[in-house]
Image 1: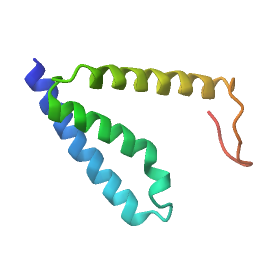
Image 2 (image 1 turned 30 degrees about the vertical axis):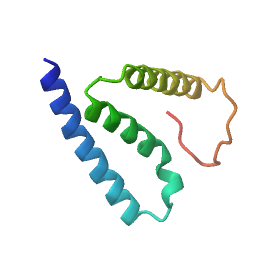
Image 3 (image 1 turned 120 degrees about the horizontal axis):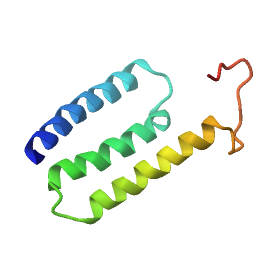
Image 4 (image 1 turned 180 degrees about the horizontal axis):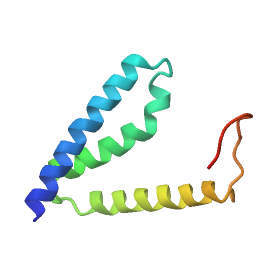
Length: 91
C-alpha cells in the first residue's frame, strides 16, 4: 500500500512541478507569487525521496498541513484580519 501511495505522490509532484513551471512562464508575478506552492512541493519531494527514512520530514509536513488548514478556516470565517481587495468576491 505504501508503494502505491508513493507512486501517486510522485505523479502528483510531477503535475505540481509542471504547473509551477507553466505558471512561472505565463505569469508576471515572479517567484514571490509561487512561494507557497514551492514550499509544499519541496516538502513533499523531500518526503518522496527519503521514503520516510527521516522521521522529522513527515512530522514537519503534518504541522505545515495543520497550519494551512487552520489558516484557511480562519480566513473563511474572517477571524484573522487581512488586507481585503475591493471588488473581490468571497464565497
